[in-house]
Structure formats: structure tokens, C-alpha cells
Length: 206
Image (cartoon, rainbow, N blue to C red; front, side):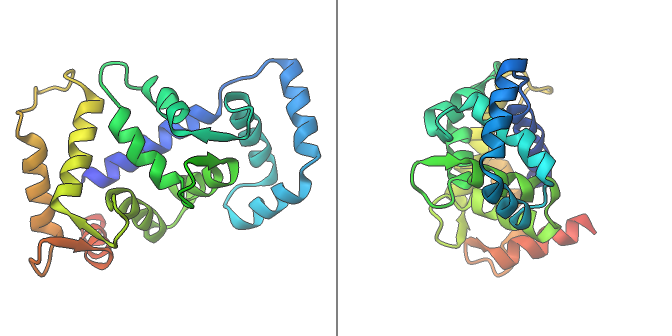
């Protein structure tokens, strides 16, 4: 299924993004910074599925890439594009950024990042499916329309570039959308609700 492959790709890429090595001096400096924020880390430890040690490692990696403590959309796109040099990941990264930017303030904080990553890496099936639905529900109105799904599919094909094998037909994104709706849109009203989405995905996984 598209959503399962998509989630695995997101998991892998974002772990890679956060684990860039820093040199020894920067490590020591960032560890000192972490030690000055024990309450924040303890709160995140309680809210997420990461240990305090894991959060320290993630924080150092995050600060190494984003010294300001937040990621704006342009930086997010730049980091993400490094993993897809053969294609254009701009549009998909935009959708992904909006999924991480849960308060819609135009930036992703360390807290936003940790909570999203916690779901993607260690969340329950239900939590991961809710996260995926939120990604596909571009305008956040509680429904996935064919237009939204087509935008996502086109973005994924653009990101993968023309190096896919076998070579994909031009109408492949639309065909995938039609297949998606045949399986998901149970009452045939032209939109997919969160309940329809989760029920269909769970049936496939079982």
C-alpha cells in the first residue's frame, strides 16, 4: 500500500536528518546546553516514546542543523531534497512540513519534531494512520478528496524523479488515486473520512 511505503520512507529520512555527526567541541557545547534544559527534556520524555538519552542525541542533531532551535519551511525543503537528488521533492516536503507544523505557525520546533518522529517510529498503528491521514488531508477539513490525493501522488512521483523502474505512465498518479478511492471510499460520496481510512488500512494489514 502507498501509505505504508510512504511512512517507512519518512521514518528513514527523518532519522537520517537528525543524526548528522557533530565535531567533539560542538558535542560538548550542545551537551552543556541540554543539561541546562532538564525540565524540558523530562517533559518530552513523558510525552513521547523516547528515552532521555535518545532525546539528548536528537536535540544535539537538531541544534546542529538548526542553531536557532526551529526549522522554517525553506530549510526543511533543503534538507529533504538531499535525499532525492534525482527528483524534485519541493512539493512533497511542503506537505510534510505542514504535517509536522502542528500549530501552523510556519516553523517546526524541536518539540514538534520529536512528537511527530515519536509517532512515526514508535507509535501504534492507529497513531501512525492518524498521522498519515493528516498528511493527506491537505486543507485539514477532516476529509481526503481526490484532488488532495492527486496532489500528494504527483508530489511523490516528482520526488522520485524519472529514475523509477519500470518507467511510469503519465497518468499513473491519477490511476493510483482511483484505486485508492475504490478501496477507501466505502459510501461512495467522493471523500474519504478518517474512519474509512483507518478501517481500510487495518483490513489490508490484517
